[in-house]
Length: 193
Image (cartoon, rainbow, N blue to C red; front, top):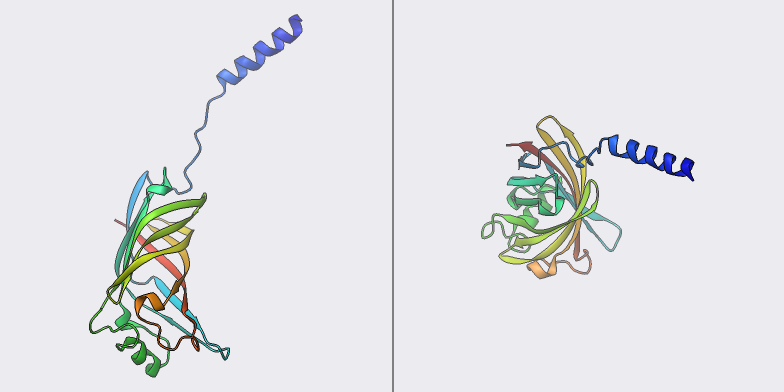
């Protein structure tokens, strides 16, 4: 009985003397860090075609920023503005068509915007981001998956993916020959402010 009590006392003393090391945040950034989105970020898109072909291209970033709350990722946010007038598929005829009033109507609507409203962590360095996407004057909630890619000094990058329907934004031309779904694959580069 004395041996058990003595062993328990030693274990309790060791436990009390051992320092508690707090869990480290997933990101090395301070509690809250602000980043502007580098225009060099890549916003790629893909639209399937029934015959097996596809339209692949990119849309340039006009501006944007994200805020990372390393202590509580759910309180992070992102806002981004894209410039569809600079859409590039490598095919001038398709680029002109996408800029026309049949698709983006860039003369009337020169920007596509996304503002997050909800961030749900799905892992230590990933999250589901929901927000308001506005294109051709129409706004609706859309969801993207974001995964931390790397951090280097004052730069941080994320790989972001998501599938967005075209019809609700008045861009349904060509459906069903071309898919209603636009798949986005983005590499967002942030520069610390």
